[in-house]
Image (cartoon, rainbow, N blue to C red; front, side, top):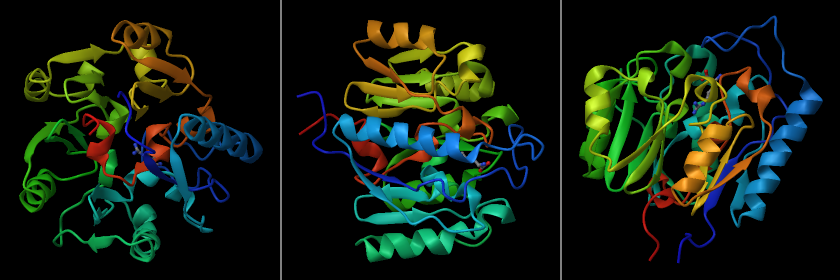
Length: 277
Ligand code: ARG
C-alpha cells in the first residue's frame, strides 16, 4: 500500500486574502493579488487534493486576516493535540484565536507555547520519519523547537534558515517519506546542510524552481502537488518513484506562499511521511 487512507487536510478559502502588509520579501503592497484568480487557483488546489483522495476540511475565512488562508502556520498537529503558532509579526497574531477556536470545536486539544517563543506551526516544523526537522531564525525560535520536541518526545534537528526569501522551512524543504526529501541547499547554513545529510535520499532543487516554490509541496502518498514551473523537479520526482502534479498558484506566491502553505495535515504532519499501516 503506498498511500495513507484519506489524509485529512485543513484549508481556508481566500475570501479575504490579499497583500495588505509586507512581512517577507515576496510581499509588496504595490503588487496586489487578483481576487478572482486567487479564488480560482485556490479552488484548483482544493479540487486537485480532493481528487487524490484527501478529505479537505474548511475553516471559515475572517475579514482582516488575509494570511489565514495559509493554514500550515496555524500550528503543529500531533495526534489530537495542536501546538498553536505564536506568530512573530503582529500582522498575523490575530489568526491564533481563530485557529484555536476551530481546533477546539473540532476535537483537538490546543497547547500554547511558553511566553517569548515564536513558533509558526507546520510552516517551520516537518517530520521526516520520526525526526522533527525544524526551521528557525527568521520566524520560529530554536528554543521553541526544543521545547516542542520535549513535549512530543521526539528527536529534533533545528535547521538555521539564512535566505529571507525562504523564511519558513516549508519553502525550502519537503519530506516525501521517511528516507526522502526535496530541498534547496542555499537556504540553509552549513551546519543545517550537514545535518540534512542524515536523510538517505535528498533531492536538490535549482534556484529557478525554488523561487517557483517547488519545495512547498503537498505530499499525498506517492503524489506530490506543487505550483507550476518546476519541470526539473518533476523529472527528479518521477525518477524517485513519485508522481508530480502541478497546479497554478502564482497569486499566492505574491504573499510568499504556495501549495503546502495553503494546507495543514490534520492527521498529523508525520502522517504525510510515515509508512502506511
Ligand atoms: N504572507 C505569509 C507570511 O509571510 C505567508 C505564509 C506562508 N506560509 C508558509 N507555511 N510558508 O507569513
